Image 1 (tube, rainbow, N blue to C red):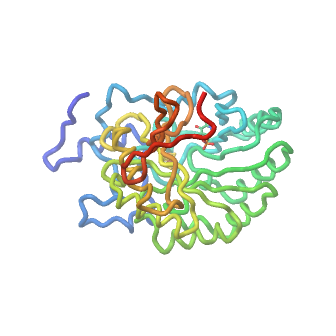
Image 2 (cartoon, rainbow, N blue to C red):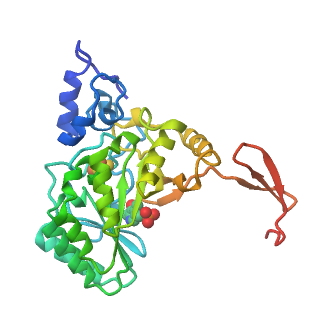
Image 3 (cartoon, rainbow, N blue to C red):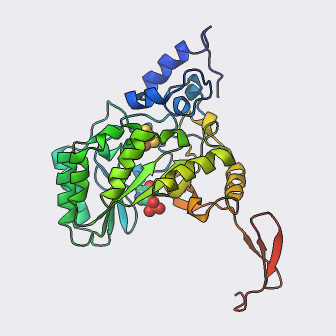
Amino acid sequence: MGKVERDEDGTIAGLKQVAAQFAVAVTPHLQSLIDPADAKDPIARQFLPDAAELEVHEHERGDPIGDDAHSPVPGIVHRYPDRVLLKLVNVCPVYCRFCFRREMVGPGSKGLSAEQLDAAIEYIAQHPAIWEVILTGGDPLIVSPRRLKEVIARLNAIPHLGVIRIHSRVPVVDPAKINDAMIDALKSSDKAVWLLLHANHAREFVPDSIAAIRRLVEAGVPMLGQSVLLKGINDSPAALTDLFRAMVANRIKPHYLHHGDLAKGTSHFRLSLEEGQMLMRRLRGHTSGLLQPTYILDIPGGHGKVPVGPGYAEPNADGSWTVTDPWGCSHRYDDPLGRE
Ligand SMILES: *Cc1c(COP(=O)(O)O)cnc(C)c1O
Ligand code: SF4
């Protein structure tokens, strides 16, 4: 892990190299939210490139969550029996500096061709165990409403599908895209369309993005929040509380808090699992139950997502349990049904 050489002004040489290696894009909407006077601006830190990205740690990898190993046809990732990812595009309106798919997404990468989309949809149709399709990528809401409506219609024609899920950052990074045509495309589905919004800081919730979220929720689209735990952005109880309150106040249920994936050049965003668990403990009991997401690790190598605590119940040798309350005190719990 080499130390980055910086120019006298601290950045320029490194930044050019970063932009050569990883995609860079910031929407005008987000640019308007950045406070130039704030050196620790949480919007700038998420989207503006940093020379620290050139420091690649030995544990970091090109495919941190092992998508490649589970891709039967282009555009499909089938790791869990009942659900698949369908990656329509590999582009995003913005490029998060900590992106777990940063080696795959970017303006140079191609989306699915018409033939590849046919083959991906055929794969779903041929596998009755698939109950849910997760549109991701790339950001699926970057495609035109007309194309999205077409894809939704084709998915609606597959009887064994129960739900269409969309993973998107568009409502907070480019809220103008949630226009009438987009709402119409989402409402055209007979199957439930769920939207998982990726947001990491309360500052992403401003009048324009709040209005976009409102249009979605009022169109009958249930919304869940997913966030990434990021050093210098949301690594305090106050920042997480503000973020999850902003979600809940806008009718979005915080769902997953992801432990940062081991993507290349992202070590400056990384917290330890222990720090993550400590933050989760601080939320439990101190803030509404509606605010509590599940803290998730995507096990490197494609082994799946699992909750990583903190745990509150420990088995004792005598068959009882020790349960910790939200304030850190331990209590004995005798389960009337005992333990194996
Ligand atoms: C994250 C992910 C899913 C969705 O998992 P959930 O726990 O249902 O959110 C599905 N397939 C793949 C390959 C994934 O990486
Ligand atoms: S929106 Fe998602 S896929 Fe796109 S750059 Fe950000 S984290 Fe990566």
